[in-house]
Every structure is written in C-alpha cells, then in structure tokens.
Image (cartoon, rainbow, N blue to C red; front, top):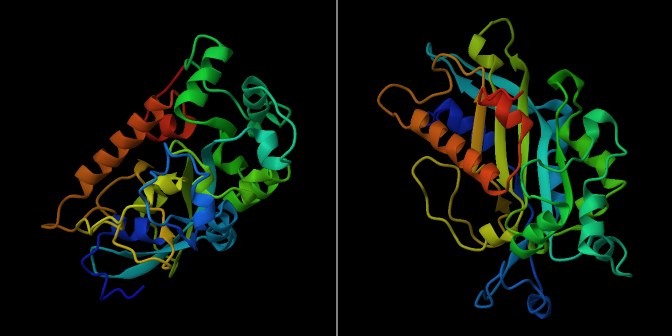
Length: 312
C-alpha cells in the first residue's frame, strides 16, 4: 500500500481494508437461476454473481501462514507494518438442502437428522460443534425455526479455546472440510442470507521491529456474510468505508458488517484529530454484531469476551 495515497485513511480503515477478502466472482448460468431459492434471490435479477467457499478460503491461505500486513502511521509520522493472523472464531452455514443432498445427492433424511449431525460432538472439547442455548424450547421447535426462516443448518462451529491453543483459519477449515466437504464445494448462491462467519485477528509482529507500542496488542473480531444475496446490489461509495461500487468480474469483496475489539487503548487506531468518525463507527459495528447474534439466538464466546460480557 502506498502511504501517500492512504494518508487520509485512519489506521482502522487500513486494518479493515487489508483484512477484507476479495473473492473471484463467477456468473450463475441462466438455466440454473430458475432453481435458486426465490426468497434469497429475487426473480427480477438479470444476473447473479457468486463465489465458491473454496475460493473464499484461498483468500486466507497466505494470511494464515504469514499474517496479513496492515500499514500503520504513528503520531510522529513514522510508519510500520503490523501483521495479524486470522482464526476461525465462529461460522454458521444454512442451505436450501439437507446435508446428504449436498454431499451425495442421493437419499432423503428428516430435517431433525440433518440438524443433529450438523451439531454432533465427536470432536475434541475445543473443536466440538455445539447447538446454541436458549434458542427454542425443544429441538423440534428449533429445527422448525431454522428451516422456515433460515434454511437447513449444514454446519456450525464456535471456538471456545484460548488464543494460544488455536490453529490458523486455513488449518481449521482444512480439518473440518474432510468431514464436511460442502465447506469447499458450496457456492454463495446456495447459502441462506443468515450464513455468516466471524474471524478473530491476533497480532504477531511488526516491521521494523524494536518499538514496544501497547496499542499493537489490540485484537479484532470481524463478521462477514457468506451469502450472495447481500452482493447482488451495487453499493455506492460510503465516505471512507471499504464498501464500494463494483463492476462485474472484479471480484466480490466481503467487508465486515460487524466488528468487536479487545485491548484497544489510546488512539493509534482511530482517526487523526479533525477527521473523526472512527469511534462512532466502532460503536455502530459492535452494535450491529450484537444485534445479528441476538437475531440468530446464538451465544458467541469470542464476542462475549471481546465486549467484556462475563457469563457464569
């Protein structure tokens, strides 16, 4: 990144820009458009772009191995690059089909069977897939709730281990995809608008080294949609935000719709004096993330921890 052209950006802007995946886009063949879920993809759409989950994970491959570099400008105008490693914090994938229909194409199963398999617990304690508490009065009610409003729950995962026990996002996905091949084969057009993931970003080192800056211990939690239904309408430029108008074929950008931070102290990440807006933006993104989790009736361990919520 050219620091001169980015001089008007805050360090928070740069973080969001440098950690936003841009995925290779493809056009759905018109003959396939008739089979899409019309609740998620209105019939009046002339074209629908999509990405595969496999291409999305490719965006995190290098970041998982070496970290994502974020250019930082300090108060004394010194510049450095802080590196962050992504970890899968949470994910929920809802589809139009049962799990077996996705993975083998033959046989039918009840929706309750599909839901139970999606939340099975033969993983290790830190890797287990668990059903969120407090959503419904019974499993059958919960199944009905998901199927009617959100689609079928194909896969979900919520990380509960400490940061030091976690593996980078790509390693996690590679492990899960051996049991859930849809994690690489599914397309964004196959997913319900309720499909989402959260990525936790932890700092590893900065270049040049030698300076100890407490704000560089800041950790971030970003929330991203996984469905094409939010990508089908062009979005106009919104101030300094990373969302922008996009022409077909340029790739699909997935900027975070929600954000939480941990150990953010001082003002390194916020807008310089006179620019303003970052503090309000952080509060807005935090509120949106909180609202999203409440709508889906899920408890997200990392969100609670980042936002200071302590549960018994």
